[in-house]
Image (cartoon, rainbow, N blue to C red; front, side, top):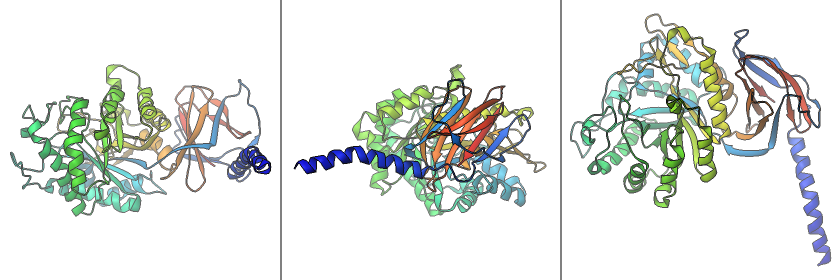
Amino acid sequence: MRKTVKIIFSLMFVLPQLQAQIKEVKFNLKSSPARIYTTSQADKQKNKLTNGQPFIYKPQPLETEISIFVDPTHQFEEFIGFGGAITDASAEVYAKLPKDKQKEIIKAYYDSKDGLGYRVVRTNMNSCDFSSKSYTYIKDNDVDLKTFDISVDKQYKIPMIKEAQKAIGRDFTFYFSPWSPPAWMKTTNSMLAGGELKKEYYPVWAKYYTKFIDAYEKEGIPVWGLTIQNEPMAATPWEATIYTAEKERDFLKYHLGPELWNAGKKDKKIIIWDHNRDLAYQYISTIMNDSEAAKYVWGAGFHWYETWTKSLPLFDNQRLVKQAFPSLNLLFTEGCQEKFDMSRIEDISIGELYGHHILNDLNSGFVAWTDWNVLLDEKGGPNHLNNFCFAPIHADTKTGKIYYTYPYWYIGHFSKYINKGARRVIASSNRSQLETTSFLNPDGKLVVVVLNRTDSDYDYYLWIAGKASPAKSQAHSISTWVL
């Protein structure tokens, strides 16, 4: 007995040391130098490759030494991927371009080597603001959904989605969001400017989702998931529908959840909220604290437009959601720079907007990140209510010229290098001027992103397990290390 106890106590002391040694071997930094990809304002370079300096022994950095500290031994949620929305607007612009430009755009987004490596596609069910007109898939007052027909999507949207699907391959991840039910199902008898879904149509509207899934899957497009409602608390001038937290909860609990499960679609990922960070905790907790509603929920979606109230981005609210509901998957479902202006097509601050939000979202525990329109025209549309916006890529439909904005390059500093199945690891900066995140890919490569939105250059160290590599962060730049 004494011998057994002695062995147990010995193991208690020895095993942690062995584990530490294993981790030290796993993250050996003596091999080839890091590759560093940089986009900066100063020399207008985009994703320029340089080799990092060798890692040197540095057990304790000083307070005066600017440092990024990365600890790959602490790993978190598994990442799914980056992507963007193929809306009616994106697909219509795409269809107007010459074949060679269409191929260029598909490659630019979905090619894993020479493009952004997008894996995720979002689209709209029924029309949204980025449609040329309002539409639904059924005739008025068809409560049996016998006239359900997605022919309108087959003209532009589905062909582009299929091209993306072909380029992505087996990692293709597709989900959809509704902006509004047909007008006759709503209290306002209009698809626009808010209004609520009438209670008597809750079962019909729930069935509408299954019809949409069946129709798309018949076209060979597998549906991974769906959000219940785009921006359920915003009565915007375009297609919109209001759900209080209680109403979204009850629609999910009594109608949509049972409808999908009974239809054999239990595998479809249901995403709640799909709106800004401001009301996120109150709204999401109202649903998640109800066990009968929560059992249907896979994740919660976030947008970044809470700044319309003059607030700063409220990243802490999404972190609180993750703390309260650690098994809930968080993902970014929409964001863009509004008020398109061609004179800002080369404005790096729009890229920095993306970099800042992506970093904070990833560090909050997000498992996927989806941009808004993947492609818009020379006016920031088409949009049937003149809500023109920026996209990472714009195309002049008259000349065929393609514009790659800074958001395209900034997104790429994450999406090109953080692979499906990667796990976020600890990344800490000792200066607010340098923002950072880090992921460990399934192939063992470590990815570290460093963002500098200031007017100053900074010398810093990338520090890992007692070793450090010196580097410089240029003013208004973003760098991605691959080790």
